[in-house]
Length: 363
Image 1: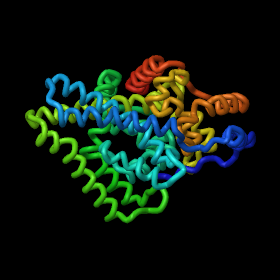
Image 2 (image 1 turned 60 degrees about the vertical axis):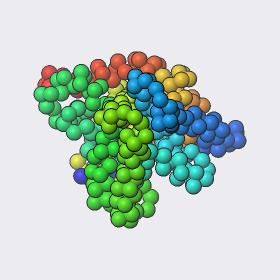
Image 3 (image 1 turned 30 degrees about the vertical axis):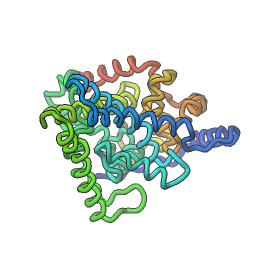
Image 4 (image 1 turned 180 degrees about the vertical axis):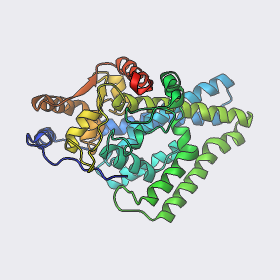
């Protein structure tokens, strides 16, 4: 895999100007870039949606259709914890205290993930090489879905706009079963890390122990405690993951795999046309920026432009700094992609998936 280098030439000094303005906003308003009471209270709400239904299922006798409904609610809470708590914490923007970020970031273990893998895939590969084929793993779905015009076309892609929504729901259950093991082997072999390279034996031990604990908590415990068949527990487990997987996948797709965003390639020497910050403007889109509920539930991930340029700022500030980013981008004649509603973004995403599914010479 060839090394990618972003341009260092920004004659107009876009990022320097933007960074100065954002810094001035925090200084003038006497704000920290990390979370505050708004984020901490939201964390309590998300953990409550995630865990209280699960506790009720274990302790209260209820009809099986109610149990199934509760597993779906747990899935909604699972995605909510991931987007609002785990995400900020593993970007080290949840709190000014490192131990709080580490603790809240570790919530990924009860979401079926792994801290080391997530930080490499998300913080390093996705945030550095956003939408660059063969570097950003988030746009690589193997042969089954063609997310980029640079990816090889197969006949099955003609139908991907129909079957892709079904596959989106498998995101987190793949974490639980196979993805983490494959990623850890790959990342450790390539000596990738976010910060200091860890001890491989330690990471493998954490992965195995955390997976065993995860299965004990979410599968074995309900089978022992609840008076229902084991296969019904597995159906509930799948429903929980499928709900979370759909939500998390769609939020990502609306930010990066829509007609407005680009998937640029480096030249033969591995050089990109733009600086890293300007690259983020071309490859990222916002959706439903004025929708309070979407902004609250997605952890500000509907403000992906702000998140990608300032990943170490907590999402609770995105709505305020979005005006600064948008005005600065316009001033420097740079793109600022956004869809006014979630509905419009979803429609555009599936139109785009349909176009990418056409045989290249026919597209």
